[in-house]
Structures are given as C-alpha cells and as structure tokens.
Length: 144
Image (tube, rainbow, N blue to C red; front, side, top):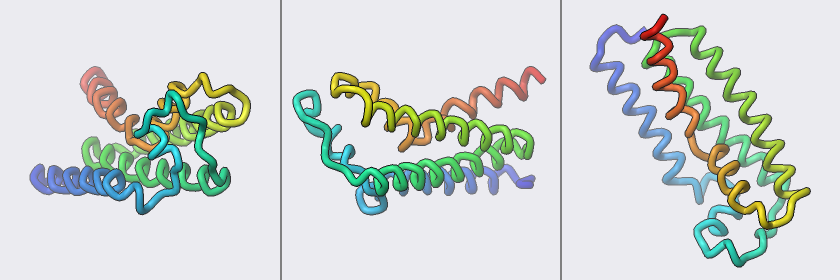
C-alpha cells in the first residue's frame, strides 16, 4: 500500500505516537485502580477496591485500542493482509487468556500472587505483543 519509504516511516511514527498518547493519557482515558496501586509500595497493601465491570471494560477497551494500532503498524511495515489476520487472531486469543487469568487472580487467588497479577495486567495494558511480533515476522519473511 505504501510504496514510498518516507511515507511508510512517517505513518509508522504517527502510529507509534498514538501508542505513546494512549500511555501518556492513561489516567484520563481509563479506569484502573491498579495504576496507583502498583506505583506505591504494593507489597504491603491490599488490593484496591474496584468496580469490576468498569475495570474489565476499560481493560478490554485499552487492549483493543493498543491492538488496533499495533495491527496497523504491522500492516504498514509488512503490507501483508494474511499477517494482519494472523496477528489479529493471536491478539484476540491472548486477550481471552489474559482476561480469564486476571479474573482468576483477582477472585480466586490470595494476594501473594501480586507479581503475577502485575505482569498479566502489564500484557493487557501495554502493546508488548507488538514488540514480539515485529522481529518474529521479520524473521519469518526472511526465511520464507
């Protein structure tokens, strides 16, 4: 789609800027009581009170926002619809697994699992999968 390399670079930089904006305005855009919790000395604190439905809806919204931008970045870089579909499928599968894990950790485990909760939440709120997909897809393209 983007034949001009300079346009491609500008579009990718713009999309990365959108990911940065999601992170920069997270306190305004999303309901997440764990944001302040994990910034504090959480080892000695109980989990914060939360509105579960609002919390999960905001996690899904943020993950979806990051995923759409990530898939667009992958499309601009690789210009491959099959790769975009595969990425979207993986991201959807990861969302389901991570949300289920988050639910289990919050409702059926004790608070000794705080670090696991921290990392599950991190995968839900940050576009970490993009950092894994780009080198994997470059390698796959190179070896194919």
